[in-house]
Image 1 (tube, rainbow, N blue to C red):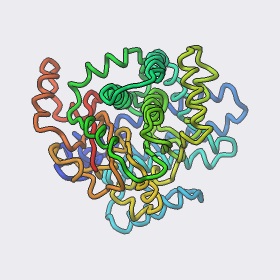
Image 2: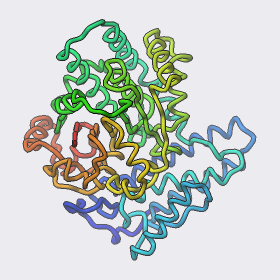
Image 3: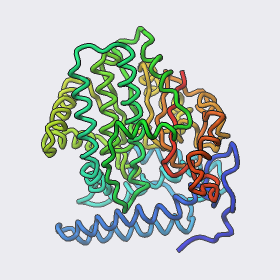
Image 4: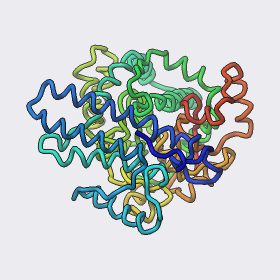
Length: 445
């Protein structure tokens, strides 16, 4: 059940070109052809498990059949179609699809830009559930996200214990504060390794000592602007209230690390409000929605037996109730736009972000949208790749999971050779770009 191989090109994505699934040596091809069956299999397995406990078995069977048809569309490189829904988000998608049909002679899963089709997949999944009577608001990935929380509890306890100790200290000099900041930033960075959309069907038990790990993992950071970010935080400005925005990626452990960094900002006066930005519908398997955000806070207090997690959970729930933590789920994040278009496509959101002291973009999808999902030459500067997206200072924390990257130091190839000299990584030319082993910490201001 796959399309004619003659439609594809046996090569990597050309330099400075948009990523597309038709390039067989690209991660876009691998994602559509090999990862998507795993994602669909996980959804279907969870639905079948639901059938054992509910009365709407016929409706679940119908949903499963439609999911299987959607997967067949992908693997057979069928043309895209409009969304059969009247929701606000679907109507926005249909306007974009209409433009795409008018501008491109071929609009199929592998020929069209991978960023567009991969985003389109999740609005199509939402459409299937929306058309049911009993599953309209069903999150097909909820159980996966729930399990991921359990699998990371040991490491979350260690970080919570560390944070509580640090926050109890009355006075810290600037050097000590910077040390804690860099630790929190790196913990937040490496939290991005655990992406359920890339680890479907695999255990991702997280038991490492996070404070030791951030030191040992430094050699895998190919661009590190941590010191520059610290300096940016310490520059006074007239923005009032002091806001920092975090554009979220994954739930569970990564969300925990995001909140740790956010707590640092609040505790030491770098921000009065942290605005988290999540997704308005279930997205990319593990992306954070508002229900995920609120359930996460609730679980820390009500389900965890660790006193450290309960203490940090009470602290963060208080932040949420008093408006120090805010969650927004704008529709823009579930559209296929590159962020360089935000000023015209969603000027209100752009203006709101411009009021922030710092925008922290987490993870692979945000990174791809920041740099236009283009296969830049790796030495292209981050600022150049942003294509003038600069509402305020922009930070990207990302572990590399697909084949677009920029802003690397000139010695990145030497560093990769040293790290992987025994792993024969050269068998795959873009191995280091897609396996989550390497990372970047970027700043543009």
